[in-house]
Image (cartoon, rainbow, N blue to C red; front, top):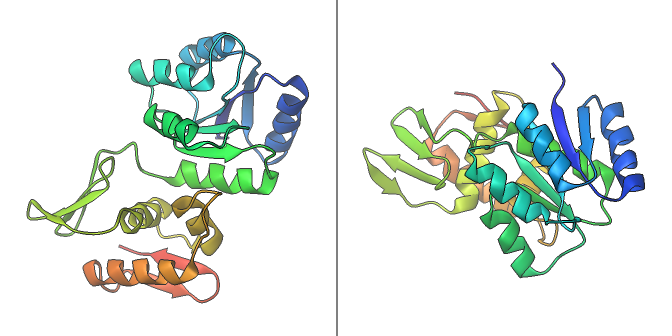
Length: 217
């Protein structure tokens, strides 16, 4: 079954450009030019991903997502916006966004971010692997009910590995998952994070040299 995306973008030409591109990539699209139409569509159908502009007529994309989250809708959401100030970033993530992409966007980057968001398991509150319990929303790992101190990025990487279900997670996807577009991604840091995970889960992470990693439980 094709992944269903609800696209909300008030610029008609850009909306059509995104529709054409994503449909060519195999996604099934429903689109809206204003937040009220998008809200109606979100209530009528189940989507796998929301792709929302922020600056919209009537109300912002932030306001719309807040309404959806308050109604219990946990659909993964990526904001596309011309805003890049820290306050806007904070607002977007505080209302429940999963990612944030600044205009003008690179379509290949958009694809990577969509794929990364869709593979996450953040909608599952708790996961258990061996003697460890992972609280996905708090990004915390426990062993025998005692918190294991790890950087958040290490736990985010673990969640990405788990979501991959044994397939190879490419280095580019890890970079997009762990760092925002405004941050410099570090392969050295990735190696450090993988080493930390190997201490907890020995013999589960395979290094595909120059490509990425596989996590096999």
